[in-house]
Length: 67
Image (cartoon, rainbow, N blue to C red; front, top):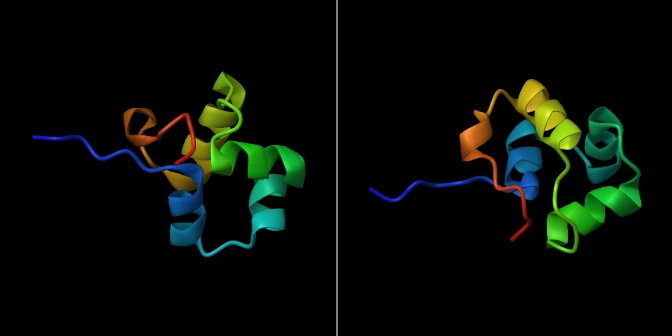
């Protein structure tokens, strides 16, 4: 069975948050958030932890590279 991983944009959509608020809650700039969302940057461990705490999505179900 194939495992489905959620990227940061899918999680933001589930939480129904605008990008600036999501970036703020993750403790990153909007520019950093956009780079994570489009796959230009890998997610740092601290960002992964914050995203998990914010969303409740298990770590293993979070894609650490966008798209």
